[in-house]
Image (cartoon, rainbow, N blue to C red):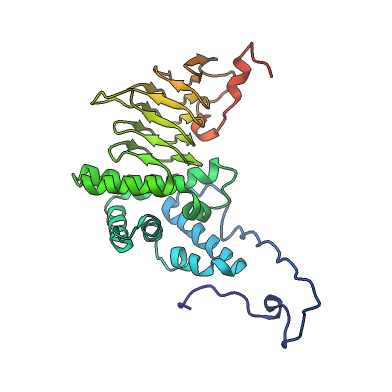
Length: 324
């Protein structure tokens, strides 16, 4: 076992007793759940403003990985190889993405070098990684930890791979960018064109079936659920995909087509088909979508952006004819 790798406990409690006694007559007892990490190891979210987000998040990821490796020996080797053996978040992420996206002809070593070189050369990409991890942890109640997001959230992983593909596209390394897009679509069921511009603090919740077209733009702190399409309207070329403002929330199965603008803080209801501009702080629902409700409800604060609050249903009180 490599040096520094967490070991399963070898005392009598972990081995079911000491001295080799025969315990065949006893029923196995389920192990207790792993203890919560102490506050001095993982302080309450969010991190102090004076501390670098990337460093803070990486500290939490390592602490969570150590705890989980000790509690679940079956995962110890995986957690060591993917998290605990790496000195930084970019190296851990590059290793994990490379192993997820490699194939028999696209080697993991090549992808690791590509991801790490790109992240190392662009501090803004590293900041976006930390912002996306913070977004998932704060907005998704099913996200039990930063390491859970890093290792298991395919929406998070797809976005990080897209950021690298976008850099390759801008560098005119377009065949490689398109190959990376194809692998992301195959592995994660998320299809984002390398030319699409994506901000930071992005949450792709569940992520399956998300499609984002070539000339689409997605702002900061946007939350997008599964089976969302940001697409064109036909064979037209040029600027033909939606522009999504900061803090927008797009519900599951929504389709937004054409070069339309979704204003900052807007909300698109699940299953809606949007073909026109949606003003900032408005809600659009239906097929075809129509605007409902006021731009800002009474008592709503400016900072209550739907993309961050994940409020899918407050607009219902604006429907005077809504019945169940």
